[in-house]
Image (tube, rainbow, N blue to C red; front, top):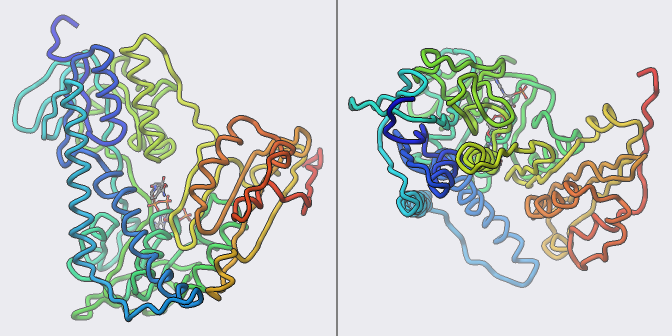
Length: 460
Ligand code: NDP
């Protein structure tokens, strides 16, 4: 390229884009980031961080109840949604500013503007100027989908709006059975709403271990959330002050808020991708190779816009690897296997590696170790709850290929278990590790009894 204004132009100031910009700048590149909304992207502004703050808020109610068994008398508690949202917004603003400061410190220029591709090396900003770039990184994330058009869809909100509701809804109906639907069901229920979850399939959380799915649903129902499966929302009617939700099963359910969490679509529209020659993959995301390079040699894409594994730490790794590859002289691929993940539902799920079904399909022999127990804390509180822990083990090599936890602290446990799984630890290594007593996680090293062994039949 004859002339360039910058070495790298990043479109999108979310987790992946910001990490890539900073590392590229540290490698000596001149970098500009364009962000049309707020720095921080989905995770910081309307995803992981505000969600987790709401999750914390939602868990106090159960703590107040449990305290009685431990001798506490908790005076009548009340919850104020406006205070929570204002405090959450203050923290998000602080984080957004921190992202800006990090980029400024690294010498990255930030433009608060929408950017579109004109050709492989030219980006146009919404207010006119064009920028010539050596490389372009597309890190524009994804946006909530609403599924098939139905009457009254205009009354439906997504998680984006759920973070800013002016009033706390007493009755919430959520459609979807994935991460967001299940997490928000727990948030609203914990804060005091009557929650109904509508899921089109047989059971929520498709893709997770079947026993995890069953256990979470049972526990959610025990906590008062209504889970209706095998049906969909057919229409939403404005009933004056509230909504009447008509289901495909024929039922009508009144709700103050109707939220859909039916997946997210990569942000690829009206970006000039086609003009620049960037191809879209079958999964709806930008097609990339293992270095996150698109079908155009100098254009890369990372994070949710590629629709690989749509998790913040993955986007960050991909952005970092891109910067090292292109500007650091160190070609780096991201390993997308054994990525730990958590659903901050009520109860929480933490998981890494293969589910039992995946293992049975892929391995010649699968051993399953499982523990279900009442956590110690629930003894005095009297709470009726059960923790589920499960290890999926390759029966021939003894390697632990999956770890699944449902219960308090599940996400924290899964993060640490992921190190062992990633290292290829064997069940014998777990067994050789001394238990830390009294914890819930000690079950992972004391589950000696093989509860099930499955040998795959050769003809299968
Ligand atoms: P998910 O893909 O997790 O779940 C979508 C759900 O909506 C599924 O249950 C799906 O059903 C259902 N669905 C899809 N289309 C329709 C439709 N037309 N009508 C009715 N139901 C439908 O998406 P989310 O929106 O929950 O989350 C998006 C992504 O964000 C996640 O995949 C995850 O990668 C990320 N995320 C991660 C979090 C975390 O790490 N804790 C938290 C929140 C989001 P079916 O199963 O039948 O396809």
